[in-house]
Amino acid sequence: MVMLRAGGDAFSEGLAAIRSHPLRAALAGLAIAAAVATMAAVVVVLDGVERFARSSAARAFGSNTFVIAKVAAPGQISRRELEAKLERNPDIRRADLRFLEQHGADRVRYGATSNRRLQVSAGARTFDGASLVAATSSLATIRDLAIDRGRFFNRQEDEQASPLAVIGATIADELFPAVDPLGQTLRIGGRGFRVIGLQQRQGTLSGVSLDRNVWIPLRAAERIFGPAETLQVLARPTAPDDDLDAVVAAEGHARISMRARRKLQPGEPDNFDVLAPEASRSFVLSLAERVGVAAGPISAMALLAAVVVVTNTILVSVTQRTREIGVRRAIGATRAQVMAEVLAESVLIAALGGAVGIAVVFALVSGANVLGLGLQLDPGTVAGSLVAASLSGLVAGWYPARRATQIDVIEALRVE
Image (cartoon, rainbow, N blue to C red; front, side, top):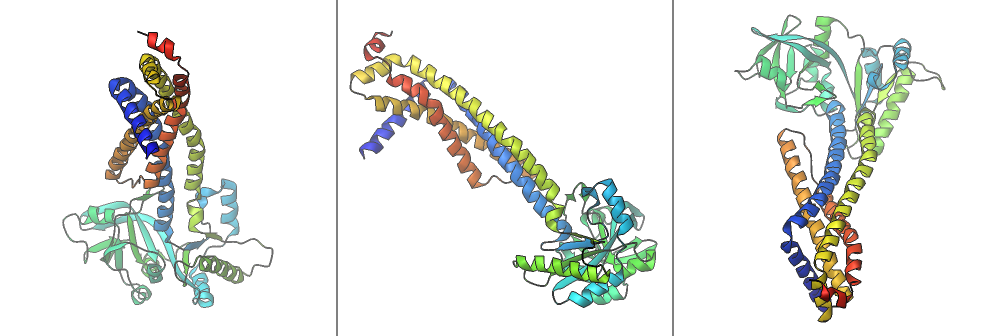
């Protein structure tokens, strides 16, 4: 109880010192607020980058999925490597898909897509640059297609090349602004396709809009445009999503099956690519790591500068209170009590500054989320930032507190 009372008295004296010179304390607190805001903002942004990388990979491929393609990631290899792969790797055809399904349907679910850019229309309206995704019906069981209304085409409709389409939000907004798109007719390659499904608004991935997609059965696309030059095969294990070992096993099984299909001998390199979601987000995550390496020293320098400002402020406070400190020592205050009071003043300034910094970051995050950036200020970040601010206050107040305890009582009482 005595220790608690002593601690309370110290903070009361520290708070009184802050109130007596509010402008001086505010300037010192502002330095801490800037440092804490920098630290918290860096954590928020890096966390947002990582979550964006993971969610973008999930939107593009689905969770626990992987892709088999002629060249799976052309933007992540050199031009020479790309040319070598394009020359060495054969195109992936429907026969490859059938082989994979025949030899692994009990372990892995497979689906195929082909993509092209083209113009689509409805009535008098046209949309240039739509992304036509011709897919097998099994794709709906491999990844979440985010169907907001309606449905995806089924296996029978796929095999019959039924003229059906599922469209993205941008396509719906541009071609059917005044009517419900479901049941309307969309023209692709001069042929009519009935809209049976609408996707949720998904945003962009690597600068490419995911809301310009038009999904149609693969066989229907082949009737219009002929067989695709090459297919992308998407796959996922039949095991539950939380079975991570099954993903590795499924990828290995698919690789072995493709090598058998291509009659590759042991030691020969693959003449196809396998891309996992982790690889698709590696660039973004590596960029976040590089930013994180630079962000640590920047945050430390900002905090160090704030500590220097608070130290100078508390030194000035101690100098101005020399006579007051002398009087308190004369009437019985111990050196420990004086030190505690000075440290309390420093910690209070730093803690209040830290709270202001967190409030600023919270306001910025809220504003960013209005724009749809999806940032989060986690409780752990808030707690860590406030602890860092308080510890900075202790460090900043240590030297001034030592100076205060060394004040000669007689000399202090003579100060006017």
